[in-house]
Length: 240
Ligand SMILES: [Zn+2]
Image 1 (cartoon, rainbow, N blue to C red):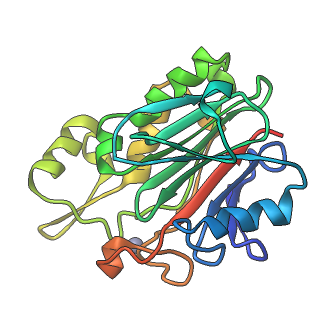
Image 2 (cartoon, helix red, strand yellow):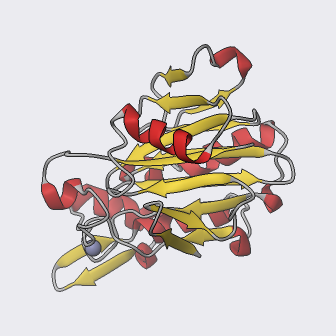
Image 3 (spheres, rainbow, N blue to C red):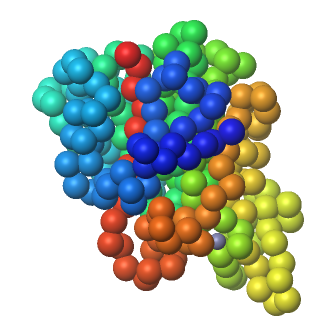
């Protein structure tokens, strides 16, 4: 279950719980675009030095393996990357989303973690599989990987058209589509759960939220709803 922790302004996965330091941010946590939001988390919850990794997201399927050679300062920016994996301790992996799907991954026993940002493009191109492959390279076992899918735009609001609709039906079938009259809506969550299962993640190890970023104006920014990018949600994961 993905539960909301009101006093922190984040969603957490009960599968990861306290074993892995993680969170899916909201408006209440703060705007992820601003460095102060990460600083606030570190100041509140972490008492030792931490390296923060910030990918410059481009809707690709590039996964960066973060090791000691990549970390050169307190805040490290990774070019052209939409997912990060690491087995280093005290390295905070982050991504930002608005309506896109954030996923946090962890093999707790083998101490390998990952995080990804995927919209319609990353979903069609199967970013989840790329993350899982890189985690396995670092020693994770897929039957032990927990994948928590955070809040994104849901099929109540995410209308799709034309070629994009056809591509999703071809890739996933009708089960990721909701029809309403002559309108077609995409269930990005269902598509991402399909990808995780196809990559070998066990159903019992998949956690997800049913909140919609476009419907819940109090907690989420939404480009779909607001038509401008005012702020973005910050998501993070770290091994301690
Ligand atoms: Zn909605």
